Image (cartoon, rainbow, N blue to C red; front, side, top):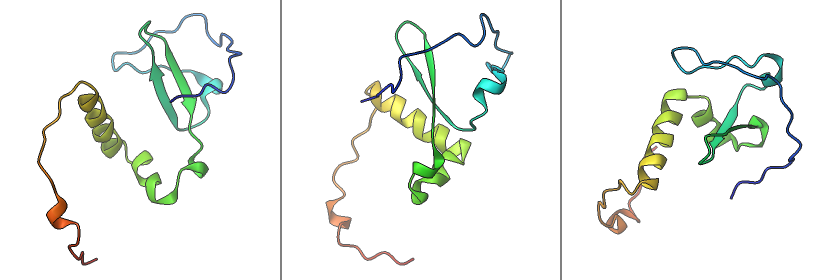
Length: 100
C-alpha cells in the first residue's frame, strides 16, 4: 500500500521534454538523490524521495547498485504480469548448513 503523505502538489515546471534516453532535468526541486518512481493508469508519474537512512543497512546495497535494482524491479514487473515459473519446493534445503 502506498501512502502519499501530502496532497498539496504544485507545478514546478509547466512543460518539460525528455531527452532521447527518457531523462528529465528537474533542477533544484529534485536535489534528493534517490527516488521511488510511481505511475498510475493515467500516465502520471510521482517521484517519492527515499530516505536512505531509513533503509536497513543490509538492504542499502540494492538501492546503490542500479544494475541489481533494475533486475529486481524487472522481476517484480514480470511477476505482476504473471510471468512466473514454479521451481517446486526448496524445503529439502531448509536445514542445510551454509558456510560463509
